Length: 391
Image (cartoon, rainbow, N blue to C red; front, top):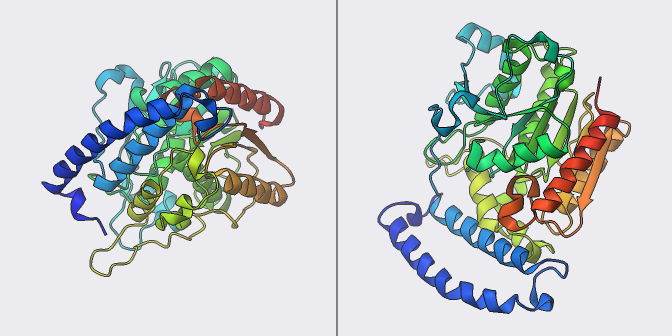
């Protein structure tokens, strides 16, 4: 359960102490990484080594104090690019959000979802675009506890897709987070994912084959869950034959259940060459599975196939492309998941391992010094889509 460090005044005291300690430690790494031989990865630049260290430090402390990430339906700086998707009425909810999208505790129900369009909103009146434009429905990463899909979060990713992957528009929903103050544990994010997909195909009339569902890290996990739901329940909710044209998974989090123990990451051979600390994943899955302070247990089984799809492949008619980083802690699991899905689906799964790359460069590329690598991967994703996407 949450520690005292997540509450005031202990949270403020910890933040002050951590800032002081890190201000002393950082100059040591600034000097240490001058020599290429002392950097965590032999092919990293000085900038990559420093920025990766900074990211790892920040995420560890953010997880320790359980940083609050409020979500708002106020358009803010996004202006007209920000869309608000209203949840269906109660009668429709009973028909659409079934099976794993029903919360047995009756605490989680579909709600309105906000989202940002890049570069501009999809025009409702222009029917000429319906069979020509490729629209990416992208779900951001952040261990289900941070992120929003807005410019500060997904601006680089969306621009990279549009410039280098050959797509016309990107829509990034801000699904409910499971961390404070939202506390939208499973299945809140999956409900929001379905709401977002229905918005594209029903409200806007975009043909399903023109949509690429995409997600990085936890967002990749969410895409996998959405694809499984459409495969298992699509015909029951009136979406038979309306699956996406393709799916992109960027460093997908395929085994969140294992992250409940921080050592699962900290003992990973790639731990020294990635910025993901064990504390971050542990915080994410504890919130996502819903810690019950009364029983001390999780309200949702973190090993459920809709949460931890590794070793639980499924059939889908949606071609899937998986990108992972050679230097990241999720690399082995991502490759294994891709191979499992390839065997289950007669080879309709692509895999690309970017040499020397850390976790989720699609989202954090410039923040970790991997902007060019992210652009190169986007080009590969676009080329794969041209050859393998459903038409």
